[in-house]
Length: 119
Image 1 (cartoon, helix red, strand yellow):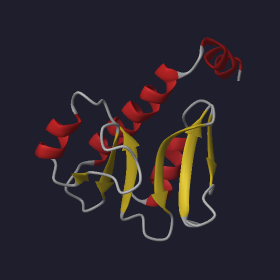
Image 2 (tube, rainbow, N blue to C red):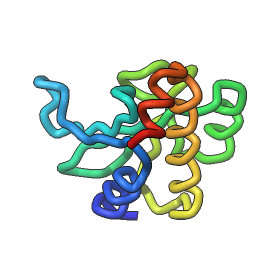
Image 3 (cartoon, rainbow, N blue to C red):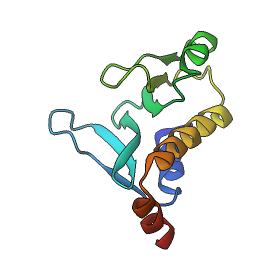
Image 4 (cartoon, helix red, strand yellow):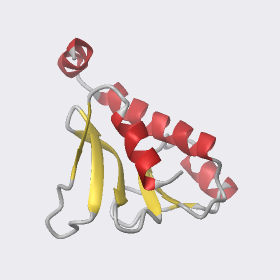
């Protein structure tokens, strides 16, 4: 997966927006659904990206996949940083992006979900 494939995949999901919201981290591209972040990456390097994970399985995944590491800026209980070292298949990377997106969707209010459905 390269950065364009990553970006295209994220934007293909319903209700997703992209932005560069951090003034002190101007190269960090963030993807959100209903205003809530589900993944982020440095657009200059694309050496890794951050995703939300299921807290009950996050330690297991980190043990199985050395490229999945604790994040620098996010909650270690809910987020992981995936190092783009070609050790993880694109198929699995896309699955993890889906999980991250779906975790955010699941936390949306009923009103936010209805607004998303209307789009």
